[in-house]
Image (tube, rainbow, N blue to C red; front, side):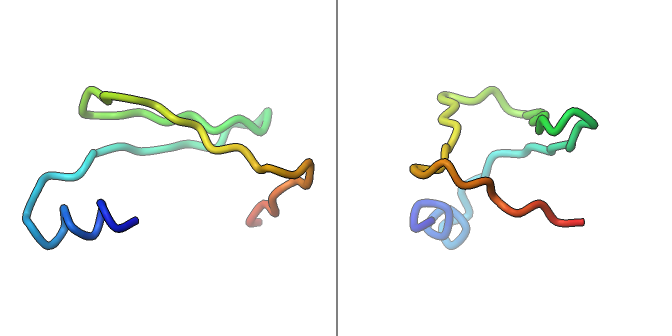
Length: 53
């Protein structure tokens, strides 16, 4: 979060991306800029995250 805020204050371009929620529950992310790395986050517990209606 700090790196994002520093980029915002410094005028450094931030990644441009969009996402869609698919009917099977997947999330599709599309990037307009080539990513240097992709690091999916996973919950350290087996609890499901709430889904906004």
